[in-house]
Image (spheres, helix red, strand yellow):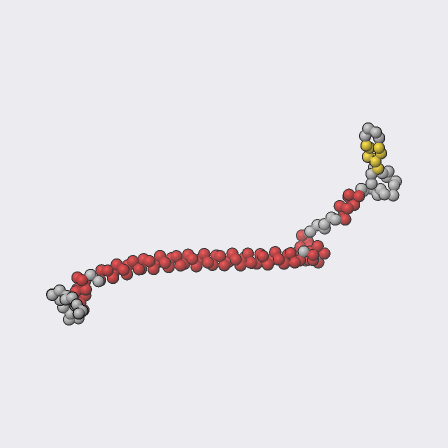
Amino acid sequence: MYRETFHPEFIEIVPPPAESPEYNGQNENTAEKNEHKKPKVRIKELIDGTILVREDTKRQLPYIIFLTFLGIIYIGNRFYAERVVRQISEIKTEVTNLRAEQITTTAELMNISRPSEVTELIRERNLGLVESVEPPKKLVRK
C-alpha cells in the first residue's frame, strides 16, 4: 500500500517502510499474481496420466469431450467425402465407356438397317424372302 503526501506543487508517492506489518517483501499485485498462477503442464504428467486428475482438467472435461466429438465427426466427414469422390470418378469412367458403346451400337444399327444391308443379310441366312418389285399400295379407309 502506498502513502500519498500532498504538497502544493506536486504529489509524492512513497512506499511504506520495510518494517511495517503491511510490507512483507512484495506488493499486493505480485501476491495476487502468485495466487492465480496456473500450474505448468509437464511432459511427465502427460505420459503418466496425472494431468487428468487435476482440478483444472476436471473442470474443462466437458469442453475436451466436445472437441473430441467434433474431431471424430471431422474425420468421419473426411472419409465420407473421399468415398464420394471415388464413386464420382468411377461413375464418370463408366459413363464415358457407356457413351462410347452407345455410339458404336448406334453406328452398327444404322449400318445394318440400310435396305441394301437387309437384303444381303436375308440372302446370307437363306430365309427365303424376296424383295418386292412393285411399290407398296396405300390403304385408304372409307
